[in-house]
Length: 438
Image (cartoon, rainbow, N blue to C red):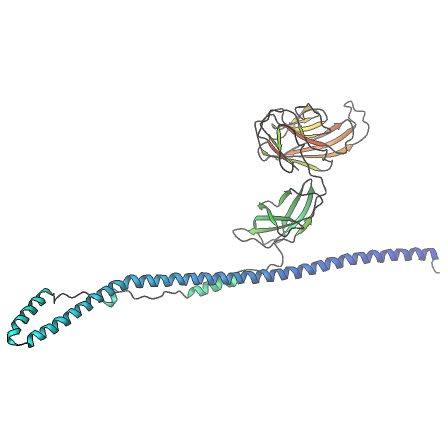
C-alpha cells in the first residue's frame, strides 16, 4: 500500500532539507580543507624563503669573518717580518761598509808595497797610520739561523670538522609550533589572549606574544614572560586584530616557530573615566586615572554607564599614594554629585584598606589591602527582578563577587530599580593613586 501523497510530500521536503543541510556542511568542510591546504602551501613557501635567506646571509657573514681573520693574520706576518728584519738589514749595511773599507785598504796597501823606494817609505808610513785607525780585528756578530724567526702558519684543520658538525645541526624544520593560541576573550577596550603548549616534549621557559591590526604589515611585541594569559589593551572596538605566540625552550636562546595567527575583535565599548574632573589626570585613552596634587574631593565616575551585568570589571592599581578610610573603588547605579566616596547608598565598593561597603554599610568580610599592582575585579549577575516585599525595600537583587589577590567576597546587592548598565568610579583623598580600568 502506497503512502498518502501528503506523507510523501512531507518526506520529500524533509529529504530536501536534509540534503541542503548536508550540502552546507560539506561546503563548510570543503572550505576548511582548502584553508588547511593553503596554510600548508603558504607556510612551506615562507619556510623555504626563510631558509634560503638565512643560509645566504650565513654564507656571506662566514666569508666576511674568514676574510677579516685572513687580513689579521697577514698583518701579523708583516709586523713580525718588519720588526725582525730591520736589525739584520742594519747589520748587513755595517758589514758591507766594512767590506768596502777593507777593499780600499787592500788596494792602497798593495800600491804602497809595489811603489818605488823613494815613495815607498811615505806610502807605507801613511798606509800604516791609516790601518792603525781601522779595527781590523773587530767583526760584527751575525746571529745563527736558530736565533732568528722562521715564520710559519699554525692552522688547525679540526675547525673544519667542528664547523661541519655545527652546520649539520644548524636549523630545524617544525611541522607544528610547540604553542598555539587557545582562546580570545573580548573585554571593553581589550582582548584576553590565552595560549597553551601542544608539544608535550617541549619545556617552555618564556612566551612571546605579538599582535597587529589586520590592516597592518608588521606585528609588534606586547608581552614576554612565563604566563600563558595576557590582556592586550588599547584595542579599538569592532576592529579585527591578529595575534600570534611563540616560546623559548628551557636553557635556549632562540624562539620557537610562531603559532598560527588567530583573528579577534572586541564589540564592547571601552571603559573611560569622565574628563575635566579637577583632581584627576587621565591618559590619552581615558582608561587610566591619576589622582594629582589638586585640592579636590569627590568621586571620579565613568563617562557613561558602560558596565553590564555578566561582564567582569577590572581595576588595576598601577601606583599608590597615602591610604585613607574614605577611599573607594567600585560601581554604582547612578552618579551623585557632592559625594566624597562610593561608600554610600546604591553603590558597592572596596576601600584601599580592603574594607567592602554595600549601600554604605561595611561588611564583616574584608579583602587584602590595596597595594601597587593589585587587581580588583567585580562580577555582577542579576538574581531577581520585580517588586520585593522585603523590609529592605529592594526591587532588584544582584549577586556581586569582588575578588582581590587570592580572596573574594560574595553578597547580594539590593537596588531600588532595575538598571540596564552601571557606572563605575573611584575616590582617593591623597595624590599618587593611579588606576587602570578594563
